[in-house]
Image (cartoon, rainbow, N blue to C red; front, side):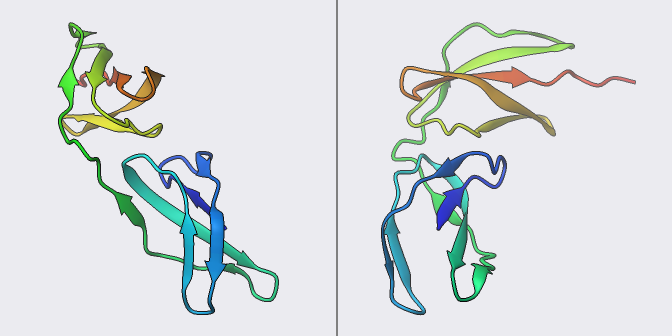
Length: 120
């Protein structure tokens, strides 16, 4: 069994203390805030289809901009401070998403790429 980030399936987390009691499975895993998917494999049946996701909420929902904005209509970067910033975190500017570029200080600061503004 493994837990992974559905935005970036390459980000996977080790599951420890797996307890399989037939219809119920319990486990321990250390996760940052975000939404996760689960893959479960049994020797008898192969991979189980699990369509539900697991959501972890942050203990603190306060996030703030810690550096001057380095951007223009062509895009740029913004640094955000907060607790437990997820490796696959995204920011949304208008309807455009920007991905986390670098993570510093044990996930308390993240530098995000701001997408370019599309004009006609």
